[in-house]
Length: 159
Length: 227
Image (cartoon, rainbow over all chains, first blue to last red; front, side, top):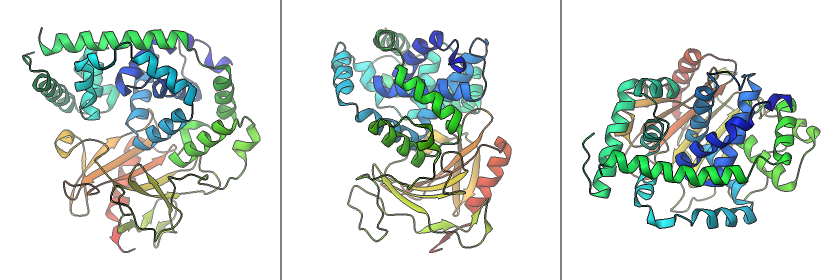
């Protein structure tokens, strides 16, 4: 178990981030477990100050990988009991959250960039580094994502 | 309240749902134990998606034995979503397999490639070539996907990404790997309708990102109709 020493302190924050990126609690849980496993595989010291950025990168790329996501979802869907529990859990907010629904309709890269910018409060340059993208692309995703949200919500899109 | 404020509030609200869930659902001992077994026997860094499907099957079956993972396996596992009949007619919700294939695979060099695995997942028709059929979980692989809908976003979402020519059009290089691991997807559009976008994936844990880029570009240049 030494490979996972320190993982507890990362589990919840990674889980929150995974959930708002992917929108499904059990898929998020799989993402987090796999992220921690990969971090351990690569010998990352989870107590290192750079570990969160590293784990964000791993997790986001796991989510980006469509085929991996399909596999995760397939695994998740087999847990019928847990799936029901998650549905009940999520119904605490449910369809009342129109921003959440609008966010879920954004293209994946826009959603990822918005979450990292407005939930993690990361500067655009750091998002670009962690995602391996030009900063212009990140700025574009954020700008377009906000504009799309504004249209769907009928609100002011000025930043 | 402007859109940024509403977005922040919505994300915080949802994050609280996530926090409550994750605090109440710590990693299961079974999951961690299985993870440690995998770490020893089959590092996930090398997993392709078919190996992930195997893992899913083992998970469902309660498989926990290290030797099960390490043994040569027969893949893909039984699944309604896996097609083993190349001549099978796709439904309207499923793409046909690409009419083109690479004539260069990094581990084989130039020439006629072996027959790929054929997989259908959520309407995507996928060819997969593993460098070592007995070691899917850690072997480099190439896959070619006819996508029911664009996986990495519409063409306009990819402006600014590194590009590479593929089949006479512009492809976008999307990094999909772990830090320090050579893994890329090259995605492109041959139309705007269903099944008119494609992605080529390449993963080799032993390569740098730059070498992986050069390799996937070479694979892309080798795509030929009817090969």
